[in-house]
Image (tube, rainbow, N blue to C red):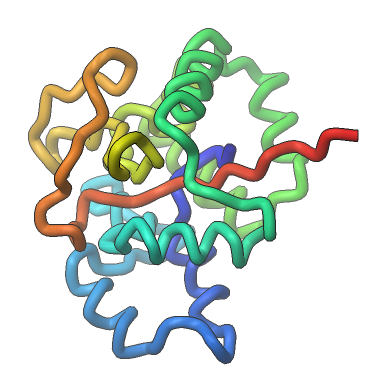
Length: 188
């Protein structure tokens, strides 16, 4: 599972593909949640880092572009990830491992800046399980959302660990709805 919800910097690589989505499509989506500078964003508008406003099907297409086995997580996968990272204290060792796991310099700078703002105590804090965006999850009978945005971005009392999956996103394109990508490990 990706550490953070998909960022606009990541998604823009997908947009550059010849058979990808159009620039005009991206312009309309970016109006919902405007871009911010990837490495010098202000805390007040940090949600502008994340690719929001995509439909569930667009998120699925991006996930399979990232990796043929990429997918939007099931609600059970998302909650399991959330529980696991909640139990991990964010120590210097965990931070160092994250920073040395092949991230781009831009991703490292983003993560460091988020750490400055969020002052995470657990890995869940760093992963923005809370204080991030609502995230698409694959659930039965229809896709829905989990997560808990910051109240200054979208006032809510949602508990991503216990509340039911948020259904019927309305409108389907919304500034508060992003996604993560999950790639199942290879079984040998």
